[in-house]
Image (tube, rainbow, N blue to C red):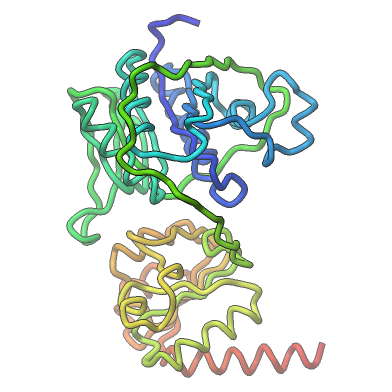
Length: 348
């Protein structure tokens, strides 16, 4: 493979691999983008080697076991791997140093990083070191006629969606929210190249030292993976009425989402936020109760297959975007649906 071949890099955040799939989602989109500019897809992994999370089925291909093999199986052509005990715990300073050093040497065309808590802290530091720009919290990526990465992101508080390009500086960098792209299926027969990059000497000592850590228990269901999502806004009227959405979601086997004003009003937890600063959802069915349809919310649920909106205002944006729009009081209709579902369950 030519050393001058352009490359698209995806930073591999595998700390919570089974729940956090953003790296695999980015590898999938990187494959599509690479086809448009004749580039290779590269994963970049820093850490201390562990096989605790590796599926036993990977033993079918022992050459590429572990995290590097998993990324190759999901679309990477090459993986840069730095494995060292000093990298067992994530450190933004050390990781920034390693990424900037490696990218400065290899000159990737594009670097993509998940917009996780770590990624939002890590990516701007890397961009600064490399003297390039960064588009944060992207909801879309494409290649234009000039071969530039078009980075789509909400702007001005979510009131507009901007398309941003980096015409001069390299690499072109973006962080992307989890749930935007669909990961490709694991291919056990796929082959790639693993390049072991040694830990360089003279890395500055971290100014922050990790004393201890523990994993939070996983939620029973994930909002961004739910096939049915019941979203509520201020139109539900009160916190008590909003709570009815949880009962409806349970009957439908779904999860509850919320708009920013509802979260700020403490009607539900922050983790339920669907929008620019929250979760992206792609359910088979999306129920929208009492939501006007601000762009920071609608941009996060455009992947829904079928949308049912309920609002007193027939001209609300969400009503116009819905497949079925019901002009009614959101709280009253929610209660009626619950009663009807319970009646049908009793009869079945």
